[in-house]
Length: 121
Length: 390
Image 1 (cartoon, rainbow over the protein chains, first blue to last red):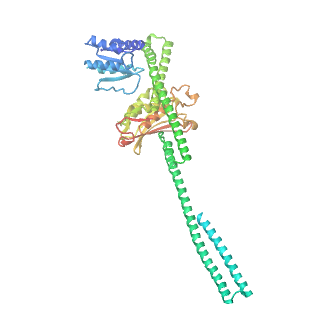
Image 2: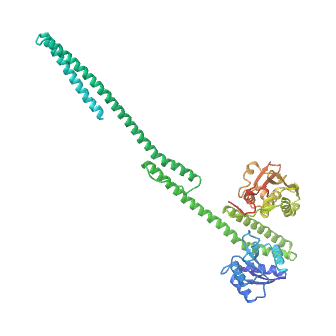
């Protein structure tokens, strides 16, 4: 199972994501904004295996956090949680190497499948 | 006029001279009769007066002819001048009028920058100024309207975005409860099921509103690619199978073999087909039959969803693709649609360069036909490129 870093500015959403992911057997770390995501990844260079970042967060967005991490050379897969339905494919090989988008409300079965695909290598 | 005045003067002179000559002849005749003058001299004097009058007449008639010529020429010159003046007047009116006609045409065609040069006669200048003022006002109002439209679109986009987070929580935690269904009482499980049904409905409504707002803002995008029709139909039917079976309805698929691929965004066309099938399912009673057919139609492929349900009353049929149009209240009690599905379906199909149409006879079912260009006819939706439409 994977170590997942989840970031969202809503505590309720974090609780929901943590609960569901842990029930699937994943190890979950949480962050309330992009700044915390960058700090968490830098301080523990071994993990996480996957980032699940809300696109819009105060202080620093998930996209900006990802940009900083990619500049640092971190290449773990990243899924972006976004309210917008479109662009569900991500930019793949693009600058930010986004593996895909997760739409709200979250389809957990699809999310679990995607996480499994991205982390079982 | 000088010619006429001179003519009158000459005439006066002619008449005076003639009268004078007659008097001289009469005097000569009197002198002859009275024997005051020698007859030969008197007769010579009489003849001289007659000759003088003849020469006066010759002179006056020649002068009359000259004057007439002069007056005629003057008249012609005057008329010509007037005509020239008038045509100058016309052309000085015609150019601004032509410009106004041209600018009006542009304005009517939507070019709100259309203005005319103000000048020339005061009347046409005033007309031009009034036109420019009107065009300016139209442009200002159009600008305000565009801004309002943008604000509305932004509002809907933001609102549907903001509503998603709480919806995600409600739906997520309700699903969490259902994962431990065995720990819930029957009543509790039923209650959670109702919460879930309604959150899914709310989710669909938000997606539909978002699609419509995108469509209005010209931001609804499709990514068409050659797509197998049979796969599209199968996917949509598979999505709906459980629901139609639960409703005791038969769902039949009839796809003509060997159809050309259509130029379509598979996700979006599946959305359209699922929407049509959902409507058929929800509006048809138990035991109804729903068919999905796909067949060649010239350079296009026609996918039809045909049911034998209650049909659509004639007065509602023409409005089915409008927003928030729903079937009769009596029927919609158990129908979970948003009233936006067909409006979005229409936008999506038209974005593909296709058409959608509804046919129905009340009491004898409904048919919805979607026609899509085949991938072999690329220019209608711009093959492989994201198309955009309002």
